[in-house]
Length: 100
Image 1 (cartoon, rainbow, N blue to C red):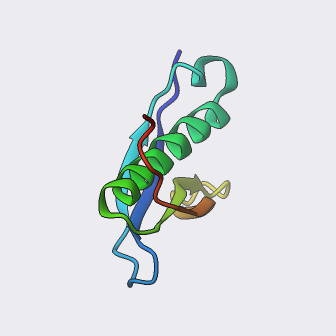
Image 2 (cartoon, helix red, strand yellow):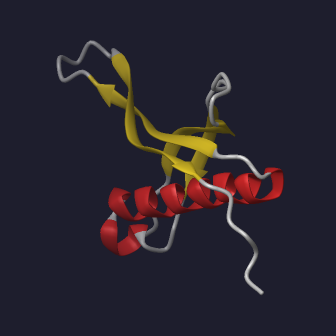
């Protein structure tokens, strides 16, 4: 069975003010064998590619950030949940010339 993982992501031109995070979900085929790590790799690849496309089109460096967004239940039985946002990667893409 494939696992669905929720993320908060953003891309922006480097040097500019980062925008608000937007929600994203990933359910990759790799999650069936690798669990959450498979989804993490697929989400990072997708967001990095998105930033790279913008960098190439706009001719400027683009930064990106990917955070895992999850809920953790308290074991006390009190029914309280806590949101946990964990950055799993960030980086910058440099514009590339299209291949001939």
